[in-house]
View 1: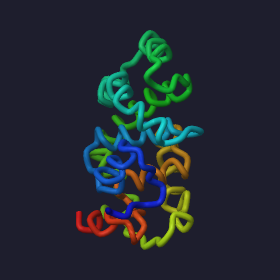
View 2: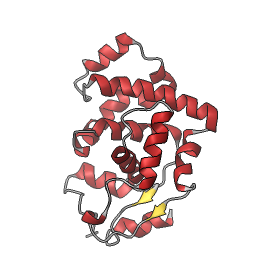
View 3: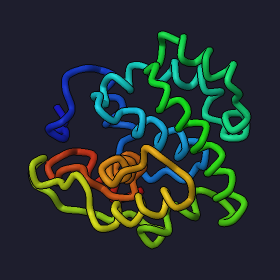
View 4: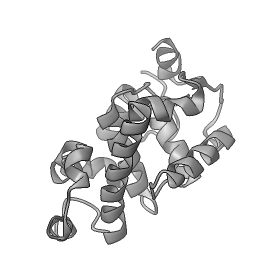
Length: 189
């Protein structure tokens, strides 16, 4: 049996997310946007809650197509507030629309969100060597810088802790513990 990071439960959804996605370098703008939104939506909740609702989010938010989301009006926001398949928080839903508009500006100014966001780590993953879950930080100087810059660009729900969780999810940092079977595999990507 493969040894996994200590945060992974026996739940198949968690195992699949950890084994196939978490920490793998992601460079697709739409996927990066999705994970940034989901990490922000998680604020005050468990990641498992969001993971269970992920497919509902994809349906409700047009598969995270920023151009479509940027055009959402009050009627669409109200429809989302009535959608029981997602977290029905007015601020988080409005934030998604605001962040979609901000990402479109970044794409216009930087060529792609991928190019912009990966510049915070010099375009390649930071490979950490943590032995235990307790050693992994909740935020870093880089996530602080990213948070400030994203806010300056018009984003919200992008505090430093959210940014660091995002960095972990999209493989900007490899925070699999060294005894996890995915640690070496992600290093090879």
